[in-house]
Image (cartoon, rainbow, N blue to C red; front, top):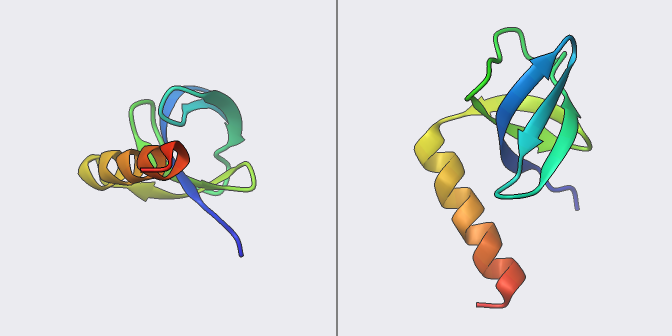
Length: 72
């Protein structure tokens, strides 16, 4: 099974960005998305931002991930 996780783009340099996965920051590739910008939420799979995501949906998904990881 493959997982894709929402993240918020904090900064972009060329094809790479720093993304916040609900408190954990990682470098991701954004070259698959034409119009991604700082502040956007994206779905990340294997280090690549593959789709932009509505903020409300992203925050709800991050909340659910947090609950799962805490065993709630």
